[in-house]
Amino acid sequence: MTFHDLIFPDGFLWGSAASAHQTEGGTYNDWTEWEKIPGRIKDGSNASIACDHYNRYEEDFDLAKKLGHQVHRFSIEWSRIEPSQGKWNATEIAHYEHVVQALVSRGIRPMVTLHHFTNPLWFWDNGGWLNADSPHIFAGYVRKIVEALAEYNIIWNTINEPLVLATLGYLFGEFPPGYRDFDKALTVARHLLMAHGLAASQICRTYEERGLDRPEIAPVISATYFMPADPSNPEDIELAQYLDEVYNHAWIRGAITATLPEPIGNGSKYVPLQRSVDFIGLNYYSRMLVSSELDFLAGEMPPKDPNLERCEGLDWEVYPEGYYHIIKSMWERYHTPIFLTENGIGTLDDMLRCRYILTHLQQVHRAISEGVDIRGYLVWSLTDNFEWTYGFGSHFGLVAIDHQTLQRTPRESALMFHEIVTNNGLTAELQERFLGRRGR
Ligand code: GCO
Image 1 (cartoon, rainbow, N blue to C red):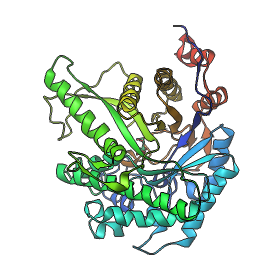
Image 2 (cartoon, rainbow, N blue to C red; image 1 turned 60 degrees about the horizontal axis):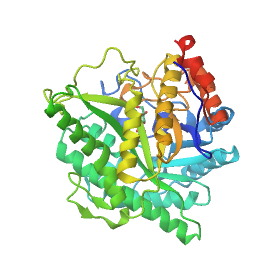
Image 3 (spheres, rainbow, N blue to C red; image 1 turned 180 degrees about the vertical axis):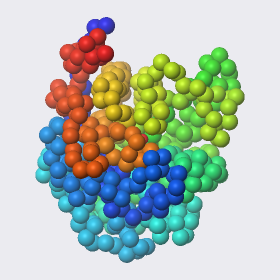
Image 4 (cartoon, helix red, strand yellow; image 1 turned 135 degrees about the vertical axis):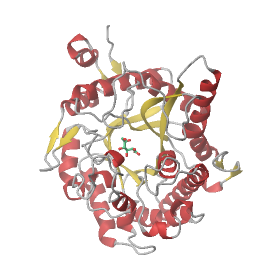
């Protein structure tokens, strides 16, 4: 196989992504309680220390800088900012201002996620995301934190992976609050959509009041490439299309068209969503085979392809072509710029991580060369961290963390990614080195 230089557009942004609960340590939220329930976290661990990033963010950002990262995506922990409803913690607000300053002073652009799965415990007392008022409750916190950070050159992410939160928390029972109820999942998806709209409106209003230019705002969605297990079975094809529609598209289409689309809502307009999507924050990890003969809602999955490599713990198949198809379908439907806000693999086989990143970036380049407007690419994640249900059992970091000593050690993939950033793309030589015969 011959490789060609795959150079990305000028101004393309490279970096990595992480979230508060998975890295900071010392958080106290719904996951803290969830982690105490035996069996919820597969390796029995919890995020009480995580990566101690709350105390070591300067060290982590020094590494990110050394590794050439231009953007760093992280999340604000709502429960720190608003420890009880309507009460604000000024020390914690100042903490995040320091975090943002630490990035800016290193020349790294902050991309700040306002909600990445975790919720304050008090939020559950009145029903959590099932409460019709939840989008407004969330918007109150958004206003507070945006007021503190508006002067920095931040790219804002409102809600992270709304459909993951809605399905894992309310349909499959794997995330708190652990429900298994389709209607509840739809209600939560609707409230998260409204929350995104209200958050975007709050951000705009705050900047306007300060006389500042409107910042870039986006939700972050997770997309899975659904494929019929039996491509000759019309029912499998139909199921794959249905899941693509409900899981990948309905929510983001609602955000872009300012409606609460079926089946998440009743198709009505929702004005706060207008102009709430400057780009689509798109996360992609894998594909999923679907079969109409199995009970998908009960978690029955068709067998996987034994020839494909897998992600540690989560067992996702490595399927780079799916990335291309997902990106293309987003572009063809919405013609909205895309920022690839997460992509990566949990593995201790760092050569697999190198191959994963390279083969996925080849697909990104393929989409760009066909005219898709893609603004940047972030690896999940800068360091190993607390992988939700899988605890410390899936290693997504460009940088390894020894969880005994908390020592950070960049892996070879981190150095490879640095080369990609330096070259603004994949040289033929780099691809040959990792994907050619010598790389195997
Ligand atoms: C997200 C992701 C991350 C995960 C990553 C690997 O919602 O942004 O779920 O939090 O760690 O996707 O599973």
